[in-house]
Structures are given as structure tokens and as C-alpha cells.
Length: 204
Ligand SMILES: [Zn+2]
Image 1 (spheres, rainbow, N blue to C red):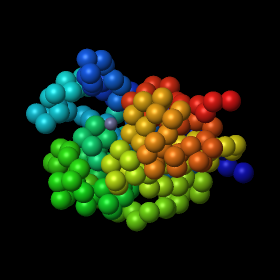
Image 2 (tube, rainbow, N blue to C red):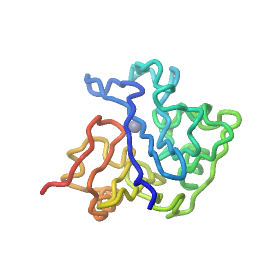
Image 3 (cartoon, rainbow, N blue to C red):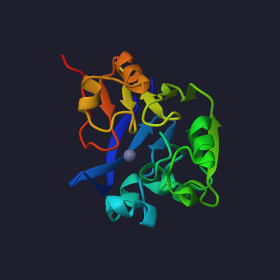
């Protein structure tokens, strides 16, 4: 049997939220069949994001190994999750069709030129999709209506890369949105968040 997938967080930036620095983390999934990147952080500044005073972490692209990533997943398309999409031309970028539509209509605010960067090839996903054996995308409405999470089989209970379905770990202790309840219902071993360095673990 192939080795189970491994998930590795990489810090790419920090934002200022409510006077505190908040990490922006992307996740590399080392799957036996492919190297997968979940969300692409940000690579430059933009006036639309100035309120959050982004500080970029230099060299994160090397830590991720951009050239050897085979496929990309966007949990959603807020600017701090798709700002590096332009680095992955020629690789499929999986996102829920609902999220793409909502960006196009303006219902989900973001930096549109980062979403629509030249050469980015989206694979619009309608609902659940098994992208690779043991690596599934599941719609998880809440943070945005078109948000999705990535469920990774790692041998025991699954691990979940949840994007902003929970922005803070504590939200998963008391799930409120449909997406948060879905994540809890998966009985995950660990849940990786975009704005926490350590994964959430369910209470024992
Ligand atoms: Zn975010």
C-alpha cells in the first residue's frame, strides 16, 4: 500500500485583524500520487487589502516547492487564499463553481485581478469531488456560500484542511455554520485552519 498522505502548513504572510497579527497559512498535501497545494496565500500587496496591513513572508514559494505542485485547491477566493494562483499556470485549480460565480457577480468581495490572473486554469467543481484516491472536496457553506474543505485520508480518522470555514480554532468547539457542522461530523483527527499555525483537535 502507498504511504498515507501528509499535510504540512507553510506560513506565507501575516495580517492585522482587530489590532492583532494573524497568520496566513497554506497547506501542502504530500499525496502518494501528487503534490497538492490548498490555497495560495498572497504574493504582493494591493490597495484593496491595505486595511489588513499584510506582511509577506519572503521565500515561502521555495518552502512550498511551487514548481513541483501538481494541482491546487482554493477553499474559497478571498484575496488571502488566491493571491498566489498566478504562480500555478498549467496546473488545475479546483474551486467550487458557486464561489467563482459569486466572485464574478461581486457577491464575494476579493481582488478580482488575482482571481483572474492570466493563465490560471480553474476546474469549477459542483459539490463533492474525489480529486485523488482518499482526497475529497466537500462543499462547506458558511464563511462564503461557495466555500469547500479538503478531506484527506491519512490512515486513521481523516484530516481536514478547512480554509476559513473556521477562522479561529474555538469556532469548531461550538460549530454554528453548516460548514462547521459538516467538519465536526467527519469526526476528524485534525483540522488545519488558514489562520492558525496549529491544527484543531477534537476534545477527548
Ligand atoms: Zn482568510
